[in-house]
Image (cartoon, rainbow, N blue to C red):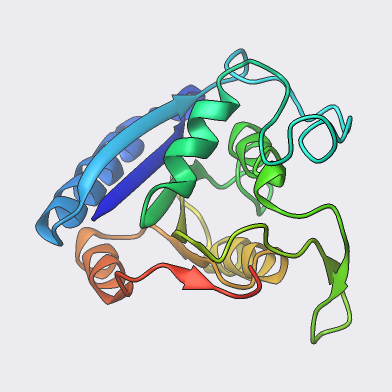
Length: 185
């Protein structure tokens, strides 16, 4: 099994280092082979909305800035784990950019979700499971809940948790099914 960990290199704090060590140990303990990439402000350009990933090179971003390798590593993994500081109730701008640039893995059409919102349908039969772990010093319960609620609202099949302690994070990782997911993301 393959796990791919993505982190925001601009927030590698002491709390992040502890979190990363815990995640790495838990994933390896669960039998995953782990690879890691850190993204920063200068790592990736923002999505230009050019639709080149749908029209010119279906399934691949036409911007050659490293997102191609990130998307290939992500889509070929069984689990993708995003480690992000909680910033104003959401994940950081650099992690948001990576998530936005996932677009080539979706089709250019729109479908309606059961809740009435719209989304792009999946391009592939199955996808890696995704876990977004938020962290920060002195996050209130309200901030932690906001992070989880917003993340799950926009990405129905993703797990979202806030790192509080090693034990509960280990339990969360151990509960994640090892099979890839199909259907709506």
